[in-house]
Image 1 (cartoon, rainbow, N blue to C red):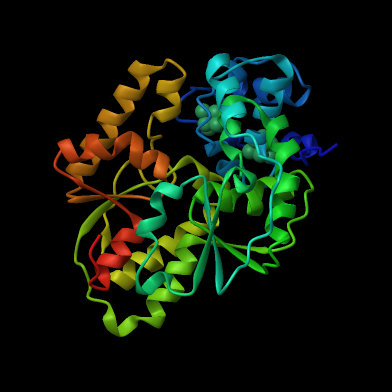
Image 2 (cartoon, rainbow, N blue to C red):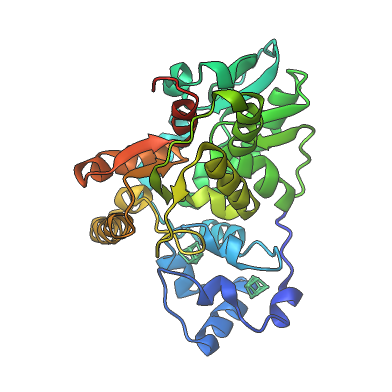
Length: 336
Ligand code: SF4
Ligand code: SF4
């Protein structure tokens, strides 16, 4: 019932085929990229559907907002191409299914969406998080992770009800702790014509606003940091300047490096789940060496999944792993 807004006409007049030419995991010459693009647009099988590591990046590379990654996921599902082993997919879909008996929550102050990360509840405390009400649970879980599993049908089935659950709490705005939630309501839902009756607010914007309210408490940190850009930010690249503003506010230097900005490397979690261990090892190694070569002393994460996948690795390499909200707490003198 919800159809992806994808316009093949845009591709017909697209000279660069950036969606495929800029892919960091599959190599193309322009002719091959055009042929495979045409194949995908005709709904045919293509090696792209099999080799895609689901890094989400082509969604950002397309300058026309034509949703090439969402198209790939839909085609993978239609053709039964599983980027992740079936048992993992089935067990996760079952384990995190909605309970279906959502009772609207009473929201005081700012609605703060913790999605499926209740373990982080205690870190969302202190001056920056005053007057917030945390919302979380399976009935509020964005489900966008199933893009990695070629299961957009599950997202299509669940997201409209999740949006209704949030709306039933009477909220006008929803701050999203996890980038993927923000991307669900800001990018994925509109791409499928699903209305979102509240304003999603990115964690970066929330932190910027709260830091400005507490400006006198900020002590510039002076750290050189490497940023581990998560896949979900590829769906909402407009949030990148927000992070730069945030870093400037707290006085940290985002070191220029090869694997940041338009060319970040994946944390490897999904590759490992898909049995691509060697590729995951290779990209983790290249990525961490790049952080060290660039002179960073901290690795800043904005995704709890990336943090779980790489936190220990970067620590062993001598970099302090830290989530972005904890870095902001440090800047106002709070313990993390
Ligand atoms: S999806 Fe976007 S980048 Fe790719 S060919 Fe079409 S218009 Fe060009
Ligand atoms: S999602 Fe990533 S790996 Fe897959 S085609 Fe797009 S850019 Fe390439």
